[in-house]
Image 1 (spheres, rainbow, N blue to C red):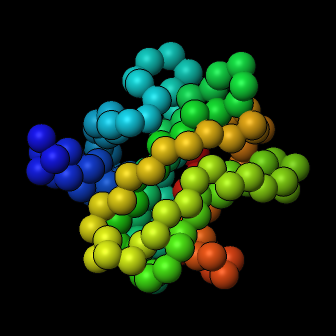
Image 2 (image 1 turned 90 degrees about the horizontal axis):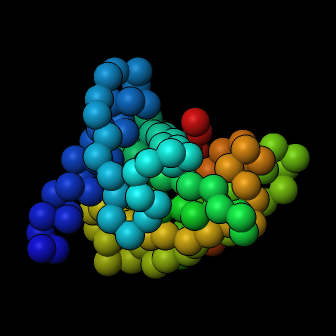
Amino acid sequence: GRRRAGRRGLALVAAAVVLAVGGPAVVAGTSGGPEDGAGVQRWVGADTGSGAAAVVTAAGHEWGTEVALQVVRLPAEGVCALIAVGRDGSEETVSSWSARGAGGGPVEVSGGAALRPEGIDRFEVRTAEGRRLVTVTR
């Protein structure tokens, strides 16, 4: 149910925080995103200043990259966006959402980018004003 998915999301992001700090952890699959298997990559990031933590799951397709994001403790009230930043410096908005009402709790969004996984340098969660909240790397 919904409660179980919320707990799983929180456990996943908690695992991301452990991974981001360099500790070992097993990261469970996300709901609504790429299925585990060959070619699925997990990227993690945490911002020590804000406490925000995120996991991005990405899978390559002929059309680009399927992406799922789970993030907690975002210090934002308005609209946020997940941005894919290419190795060439190009940027694509993968998804956007309203952080208002999330109360810092887990947020799960999914989307896609025309960039292929190998062409992506990092993902960034930003406010509508462009302020970077958390950077997610390989």
